[in-house]
Length: 482
Image (cartoon, rainbow, N blue to C red; front, side, top):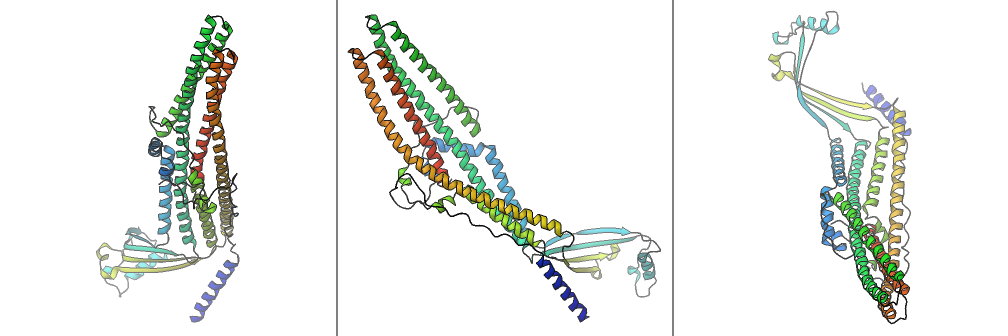
């Protein structure tokens, strides 16, 4: 007997050793390329360490923050993402229960009619003839019922870490889905912020045209007065009328654009039209924040797009480990305990108590090819996850560096354009005086008006682009949503 047990142990150990030799190796998680120092267009004076930014301190416009809250409440994409997080959480909870034994409680009723020339039929007939049983132990040979009531339990022993790695994968997928939800919120906020500032820029553009049109009307009055006394021809009057109509058409077209942007904001916030409360100010650059000493790695790895890809990589690595563990023998334990009898009268008697213990070790043989393919797929998914992670890090670094450089350039451009507008404002006054005194013709008057208008529009254009750049900077710096 002892020799048989020893043989069983030896054969089991040999089978396990052979199985282990055929198990492929899991590729280790690669390291992303080291990020270099930020290269900006000029040296940035250090005013302390950058410690992060959050939504309510970076964006102080309460009208914009109110719109963002409306987007979170109404946007269907955001609600879908929330449901995906709930699904990932459910998968995580389910994976935790797989490590625990299962327990089923219930009752089973069955019945059999055995033929007279079967082992069961002959055995039951012969049992009834025995002198060792009483009347309650006699079996109905015509129809043999079976009643069972109790509990059953089974447990797969996670000796090789398959279930543990499945749980780890589910945990990382849940964390990735949470970061994905944060990323969606940031993208939604970027969309609503850009539309909001588009609307403010259109308001400013409309005012520029209206103010310049009013200046043009004063110049037009001068031209008409000059025509009355014969100092200019009808051509000058027609030229001014044409320019006035051109500007009036632009004013009406801007109003159309304002309606379009309002409609886009209403759709994003889930309302049926209506007015959009807004301030008259575009987003200024926070130079105090830009002068901080930025830890590039810390900033990049705080961004939800990068963090989400990191968790996805961890999940794929755990999946590959679980796929590898499937090559090893599966160890199962089982037990049943309850009341079992072939008659209703005896089912609740103490003598009907019955139990069973089971143990099993199953080694995959013919399905190893399938396991190998599943492992190769898991390994490839890990490689894809790493490439996505590396891509997100590279994109985040280049985006941050580009936006910081652009911010510095916009600052210089805006200073130059503001000076240009001041010079041309003065030029309008001078051209009017020169025209009245006869030292300038009406073409110079028209060109002065056009130059002033174009300079103001260019300044607004760069202010608007700078605002959009500052909105993107919030995401690039890994801004928190509170």
